[in-house]
Image (cartoon, rainbow, N blue to C red; front, side, top):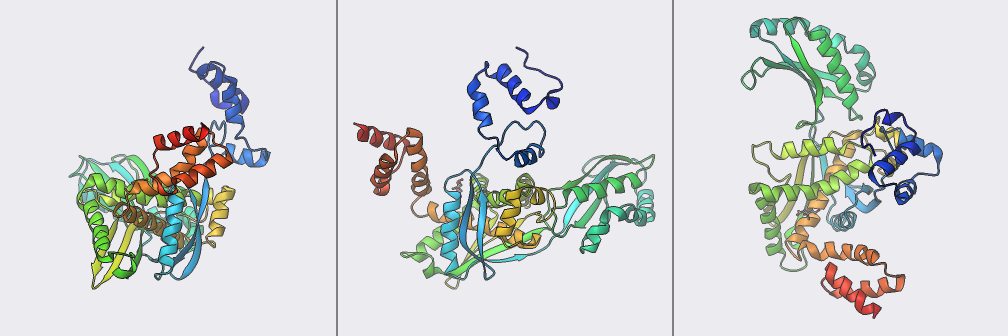
Length: 423
Ligand code: MEV
């Protein structure tokens, strides 16, 4: 059987599946059943999802959960999260409740600038290039006028176009570094359209445009979220000692990249889940966040902690390019619903909400790591998954959940207890 095909995208969904099943699954009919059981019976809804990408053959479900009791800048929120990791929503909910009685989360947007670049090669005299650029600058704005018209009406648009000499990094390399305000949209299409128009107007015989594209590194699209309370309000016992351990955990992530990556991964557990639920681009957010974490030349923690005059303070600063209009936010019914659940936030509010989700997740992880250890909570959440895998009945499940209420959970311990029960 051939494992290469041309014209695949033109086949119907059924025909695509048939070909895959015969080429890669020895005609196993179970594969068809598995794929088709996720087709939505609502034809219109299925077609909507089919059209998001090319060659859709089924839908891939992820759980959509909610974390209630978030208080952010004095306002109450229930936060939608799309994530497969069992402990993430539970941790967010616990931490939201915890801080709701300690003043809640405070968040501020520091800046909202987005960036795009026209990368080009030029081997002439830099002074001539500068003169050409300053003579052209007006026209560069002009050619984008039809694209920026609506955005300008909403208060956004192109903020600046700069010529940057990058020849010390790469021979003949220059760029037009363009800054944008995209208001409530993430702005990727808007930025890229502007850049292509600018590049087209800018190029001439001795300027070779290599590419025009937005940057997902947006250190000036920055948000800060923080929590603080008296040290003695943090823990029931040994508050000072545990607060110090918590702070040391953050300090370790600041000096040790191996730890920093895991520390930040925990933050992204919360961030990505809300970014996904609201139909935003989590890959853009991920790459921008990790670049920001390395801005000093060393990969560091995205959060910080301070204990001063008996007050514990914990905060995050993170670049987040998010939208609440356009893109998937308008197309995906659940993304739309998530935004409604968040009381139709502006992009700035969403930046604050997402930063808070990241901070909350990091708080949960560090609190667990520096006290009971992470496996305690994780394995509790994992317990029901293991029980499910074993095919336990409802009453067997109840017995096992009770049995492990005060015992260490591990895969083998659950299997053993289950087998014992079966006897
Ligand atoms: C697991 O998904 C995330 C953690 O490893 C984060 C951390 O170690 O801080 C628990």
